[in-house]
Image (tube, rainbow, N blue to C red; front, side):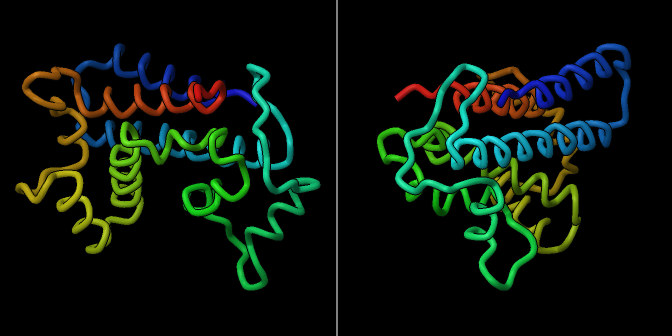
Length: 189
């Protein structure tokens, strides 16, 4: 298991932005959304791989408390009787500690103080971009914009992280997704 698809998507948009300096801010929304979807797919596939005893490209193999025979077995347990869809990112947050040895849970990084709020923020952004519902807008304004005046997601992406950190929010999110993906492939305990 590797993060090549995520890196490929990031590289595509990096090249796209370099070749088109005067883009509509909505392009940042599309780029972030496409990259975050690849990130979620990567996390989901890696969770499955680790839960069924597989390993990452670096050779890391998670120590499991629960052993699933294969993907089908894992999916049946995660779905339960009444569901067709598995929200892997939520499942990872809810139950990874019960599947993997507590001091060797590769998904600790998502729940760590360093990344937890940022991961939540990125999920809120993804939901608002995808749905544009009142509920997702409220969460975006409250959690991402910290109850400041509404600005578009594209504008937020272009804004600087802070006065002391001159990276754009977009760059910060992308770098953190890549960083988390690398930590998941080769965890440091």
